[in-house]
Amino acid sequence: MDFAKYMSIPWRDFGLCCALGYALIVVFLKNCYLTILDFSSSCLTQNNELK
Image (cartoon, rainbow, N blue to C red; front, top):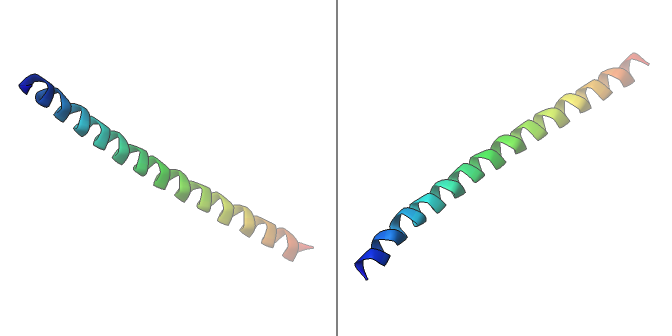
C-alpha cells in the first residue's frame, strides 16, 4: 500500500507541471495571435488611408 501511495505523488506533480506548462503556452500563443491581429488591422488601416 505504501508503494502505491509513493508512486501517486510524482505523477500528480508531473500532471500539475504539464497543466502549468500548457497554460503558459496557451497564454503565449493568445498574446502572439492578438499581436498579429493588431498588426494586420493597423496595416489594413494604413492601406485604406493611403487610397
